[in-house]
Amino acid sequence: MELETQNELNLTIDRLAAAATLLEQAAERLTQDAVTRIGRIVATVESQREAELEAKLAAAEAKIADLQARAATAAETSGRKTLPASMTTLLAKQGVTLDSIEAGAIDAALASLSIEQRIAVKSQLLRAGLLG
Image (cartoon, rainbow, N blue to C red; front, side, top):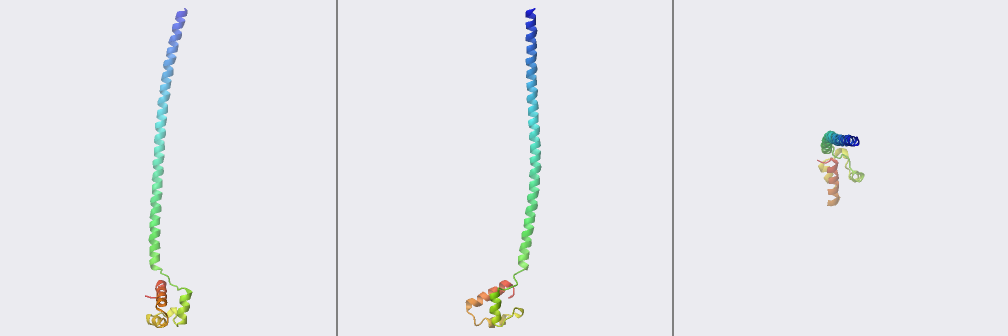
């Protein structure tokens, strides 16, 4: 009877060992499936995030290009229309007002100045957009 009990016990131990092996294999498969699924989910989320970032970057680049174009257009059309106070005073002393600037009047008014001063005044007038 002891031999029969020993055999049954050995048989039960073998079945339990086989069941444990099957459980370990099932757990390993489940772990691999979970890791695979998580990897796919992460890849999908990263892909969506990259697409969002690329769209935002493209929109920002388009806006920057638009702003640069507007700035360039504004700079071209809105030249400086005022003179520094020192230039206005110098011209006023020579009898030239900003309302009636003519090339001949400027040359006559600046005749008493040195060449460097004349060049400086005329370049200021050009920058201010008052001399064509």
